[in-house]
Image (cartoon, rainbow, N blue to C red):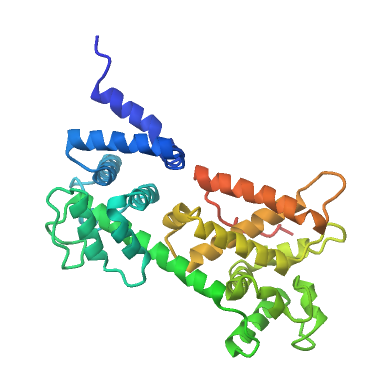
Length: 365
């Protein structure tokens, strides 16, 4: 009786794949399991004469090949097995990028390459070549052309190159946001002042400020007559986030601002927004947003969009609360902690798109 077969192995792999990242995260968070996992990788490496990183890339190549075959089977008029566009560009899933990132992060052998990917001046071709050399990629090609179209580049090398490019871009975005956090609001800086006044005009259209220093700022949730004092913790990033939200999602921002003015369960819109900026920056710095960035492509806009989603999720939680007594501003820390726990669970599970829902169409008259 046959107890093991390639078909059975493929079946087990397909069952495990949706939970692969959870299993890996669990292992990497526990030193004793990580030590055992490294022994396992060493044994597999001896048997197959490949590194874990190469096997991750090879698995992604196999996935891409299977996906092309599936598309070819569906398209009745398809003549060739695959089109030229598939040959020209390595399309790498966010799951694969995250797995490659984790593998590089925990590899003692790739400490130099990891630091290079985190630096602003990074030669991606050189870094990729060194990773391929150290991790025993068969027939690694010379990447002097700095092109994924290099004729000698193996499919696994294309996957690696594409992945490290995205990983490097994510580090660049995080560095830019850290720089904005470190940039303190300066009332003598005309660009800073213009952005602050833009926030007012976006949230309060048609209503003029009486003066730059005025209690009117409280109407959009600042604490005093001068909003500049509220940005001290998160610098210009907090103002960038608020302006992006109001400009990119005007209906959602207006709705949330109105919700924040509830006669009993009110909260300070701008101050909550600054707290959300601090939370998003914390998630970035603790790498909890890495997969989100890989899924939506690393950019400052992607981080802004996540900020908008958190704001939306917080307001939804706050306004849908049905307990007694009703919420007050004194409950903010407790309820925000509940929202953060839910968001971190969703980030870990990777099952939700985590985007601001499109506004509902206007009701027919």
